[in-house]
Image 1 (cartoon, helix red, strand yellow):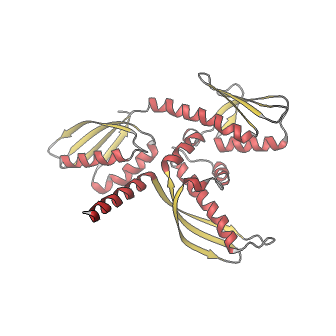
Image 2 (tube, rainbow, N blue to C red):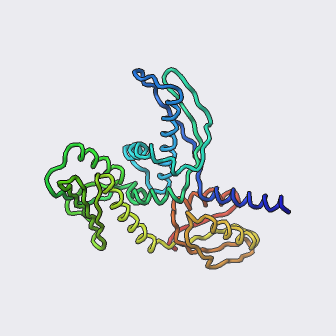
Image 3 (cartoon, rainbow, N blue to C red):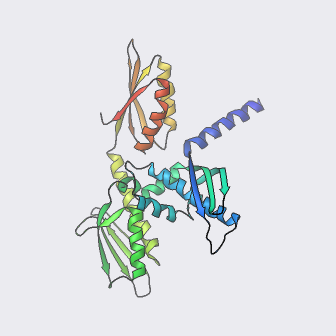
Length: 300
């Protein structure tokens, strides 16, 4: 009995880990610096950092309906070099090849999808991956120094926003005499204010509040219907209903509306408010064909 309890617990833990993680393979190469001549250990450390960052950004791309630009992808990889480990649940080094030119490492990385999805939303990736979001930018207290302009340009790329006169939202920035940055983001129906010693620390909290508010507003109007057909017994409908309810980071709130029984095959309809429609479609594409099922996901 004790063995069976442990076995069941192990299966449940395995399922929970699988439901919140995604494993992807990445290959990175760190070129040897002929002037510094880094050790293999140092090269491996840099390769692992880049590999984790690349895996995190690749998964973030999955939260968007359109591909990010190469410029934004590269900027995000650099941004996550020291941040990616907090989203990594585990990894495996598949291969590591050291040559005179440098070190090439292939990794399989498991990332925490629910936590990473929240970060992606805060960075505006689902909303701005295909088309940058226009906004109006105002400065108070004179012109910015070149270093601040460089930082600002990188922040624009990371968040997928671009300056446009007269656009909404409007961001007003001010640097006080004491060096503190103040910012106000006016979205019309909501206004957010914050201050921070540096521009980056001010920028991300403001835009995160905006993007998450936009996500909530979009979710309120994002109810979809899922129709699945192809079963020959009602048990198949029950099994699928249990399965899709486990996809909590994709399907969101879901309700079985009706089941149609015909001599040929059985179909069923669900109404749901997906948390991540792109990921839900990926899961359905993986699940349905092998079981002889067809699905339609849409507004009707």
